[in-house]
Length: 370
Ligand code: GLY
Image (cartoon, rainbow, N blue to C red; front, side):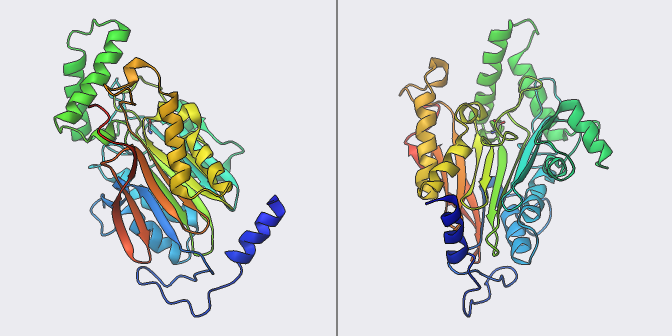
């Protein structure tokens, strides 16, 4: 199908008019549902868990706003803001687990399908809601990505409050525990120190001190609005106790997130290095462009990650990846999927039936570390 005929196909089949007698939605405001289109918001599991003391989770908030007429990306960002601001989620925003120096550095990007615009920030310090700074990069600059001190100066100039420290008592205490265990004498050589740091993180997850998914914890949230508009946002504190300045997949267009307004959206959580190597969100959207269902498109990306994981230090006893990567994908019709290398995590969905947590579809059996 040519681009032109595909556009006509989309317009005729999805955007061709309001469904005759479309019933008001049971959840949220009554959306103006377009023929053949099922509005949906999906996110990583934390998108239907944290409420920051309010009444709605990320996917609920985003779906309500989107079906009440808000811009699709504004709705998604309002959703992830709940998680960024919640001190109990130590994988995102305020209270995200800090880097090896105890400093919280945040990454985020967003993409707007209809506007064909995007923005991102990486290694941003001092702003609780990096997703809003990513959106400001999209709206107020000619650029797609600002990093470090430059990203912070931009945020300050845009009127964001810059805080000296985004640690919460909990994230600070967990960093201290990591430091005590991984670097007791401060004299390890860099290789041993990095290996010890990662191993210590895994041990702390195994003991239940931190959620294993939060070592690389992140939120990705993608939506298809009743108007057929698609957008996505990803926001994270990145790898817990990372080398200062390390940037993962989350703020990188094509890796942590990719959106094509006519095709769909995909985003990720989990080990960013594995995803960055294959730019898997871009791959998933391209797979959907060729007609694959979101689930098959995303499982294909996981197979690529498995094939590209050959270093012994990254393999478990079965010779398979010893980490997890999750993808969340939707297409322009409202089909969606949440997949992961290994089962266990849930993903969040909100449709006219309300919010739900669903198990991800796993590519591999067993657990990453076992
Ligand atoms: N996926 C989040 C990260 O690796 O930073």
